[in-house]
Length: 94
Image 1 (cartoon, rainbow, N blue to C red):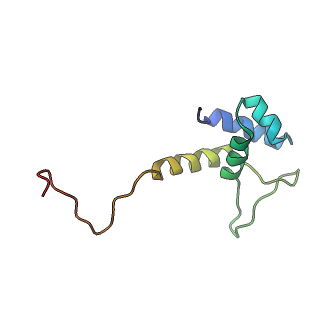
Image 2: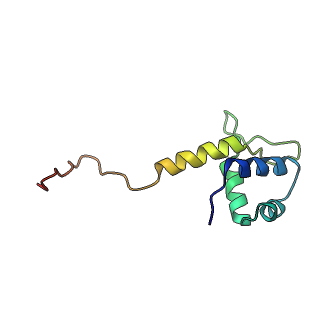
Image 3: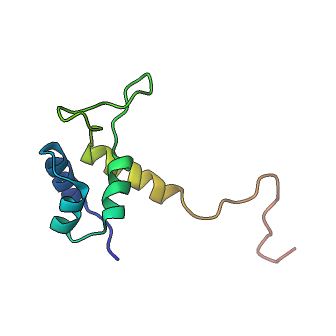
């Protein structure tokens, strides 16, 4: 399993703008259809009011840069969080 690069995301953005189907995009990049759908959702552009922007094909606009930014934020935020209010044990274990 490999992660998508910014170049992969830009290719998705270009093909999506040219009205390519997610199945065709997945075949071109050699990835799963589910990965394409997840990426399209991740990079979806939303207006200030919460409405989804639509392109000339009346499909949600996809931005490769937004997808990359959201991916990096999610990567940074994953993992176990320390408990609040509990003091950390010292070096001596007391």
